[in-house]
Image (cartoon, rainbow, N blue to C red; front, side):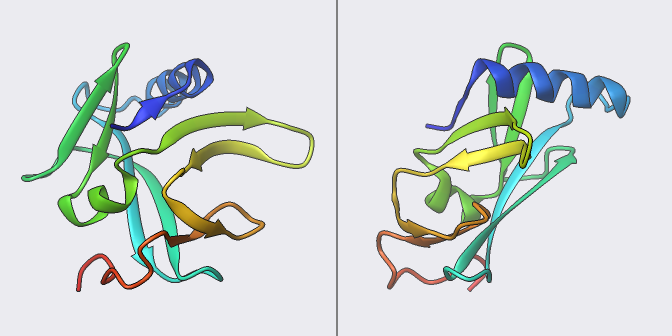
Length: 117
């Protein structure tokens, strides 16, 4: 299950409104091979595609393709607004390690094939 914090819900709602996104649009979360820890997160505002998992919380949507979903099943999406770092953050309890930038991680099952393989 993918969870959004109240801050993430509020900021995602504001972002979707600012971009005048279509009603079905949401925050797409994806995972690709790369980054300093082996796998990296990606995010963008997008429309749902065939096969996507669509998670709706308090009127906002998160979209995840089937390949990325296996790496994101237990994540929490948060939003931070700190002096040195602002934006959406993914907290992944299933990652065995994460890099300092917070966009790259190593899955607990490092032998798992990468998304898209």
